[in-house]
Each structure stands twice: as structure tokens, then as C-alpha cells.
Length: 93
Image (tube, rainbow, N blue to C red; front, side, top):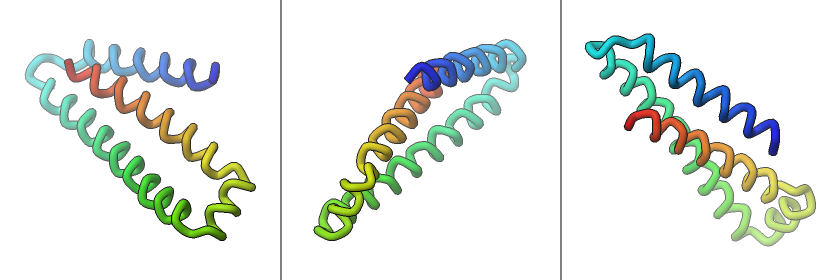
């Protein structure tokens, strides 16, 4: 969890530096870049959810995933992606 906090802090700092580097006329390019990253995160989250639903509805896959900690891993990844998405979304404000 500490590692995630460090990564997020670094991401926030990079976003702040980029905001300072881009003059107002290039703000749209910055926003487009951020929006693209947000779309990629949303796509990744959607893919995880599709796989999650499939695994959860197949008893043998569900048992295997549970035994191997797959659900826990995916939950951690989803939380991390959701947090990154929020940081990026906040940077557009």
C-alpha cells in the first residue's frame, strides 16, 4: 500500500509539472493526453470486469481463481486503476 501511495504522489507531481510546462494555448493537448489515459484505464477496468463476471459464473474457474488469489489480485488492480483515474480526472479541473 505504501508503494501505491508513492506511485500516486509521483503521478500527482508529474501532472502538476506538466500543467506548468504547458502554456494556455497547449492546454487542450494536455487535456487530450489526460483524457486518453483515462480512456485506457476505463478500458482496462472494463476488461477486468468482463473477466471477473466470466470467472465468477463458471464454478471450476471460480474455485481456481479463489484458490489462487486471483480475485484479491484483481481487486487490488481495480483499486489502483480507480485511484489513478481519479488523480487524472482531478488534474483536468
